[in-house]
Figure 1 (tube, rainbow, N blue to C red):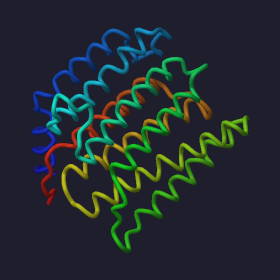
Figure 2: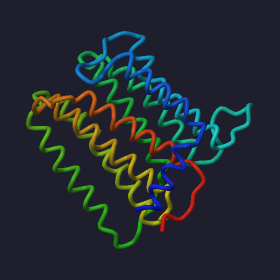
Figure 3: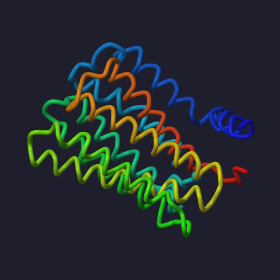
Figure 4: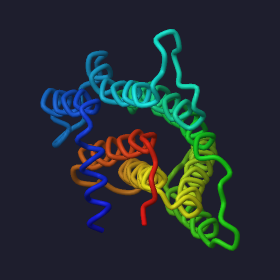
Amino acid sequence: MDSFKEELVRRMNNTKLFPFYGLLAIYYLSYLPFWHYPPVTISAAFFKALPIWSLAFFVRQTAGVQRSDVFPKEYYSKFVMLGLLISSVGDAFLVSRHTLFIPGMLAFMIAHCCYLLAFGPSEVPESRIKSVYALGGVASFFYISDAIDSFLMQLIVLCYFVVIFIVGWRAEARYERNQTYSALFGSLGMFFFMFSDFIIATDKWKFYVPFSEFIVLSFYYMAQFCIAISTEEDKPSL
């Protein structure tokens, strides 16, 4: 545990992450997502996406991309950066949750597909983690779906749950196989992502969750932060 804390602090102290901290503070102080949802405005969407753009730029810097190139050539960093950029589109859509909820979900599904490509098919033989995530996905879907009246929405939610739980499984399988801090942060990022989305679904369809916007955003930004720092130079976690 001490070595994990040291590695986390080391990565957090990277000066290339300072823009993320600053933009995140600006968003929270400007729109106060502690008591209510931010206003449905272009500026709210812009400032909500800015921290994610800064993480995408961090990934690009960490990968040492040449000025003439847009995306990293390294496979993992390239798809993480793509996932971050597409996630920012979902962020912008979800500022208007009543009218653009479905486009926001679809944007995040595409982003998760990018993360799936990044994590890759790295499975440990005889690991039970696949069964654990499959059971968690099925249980989560049935818990949420009985409160959704629209069959179309149930189908979209089903597709989303399938995608995100597969990505979570692959992230965890990657850590089981590699046993590195980078793989660990990627796995933690997907766990935070699933928790954030589960709170969104619970608050929208099951029952009111106090401070849901603050909880959702906090775990969402932690998720993207962990996935972004997972692109840093790797070393064994044990």
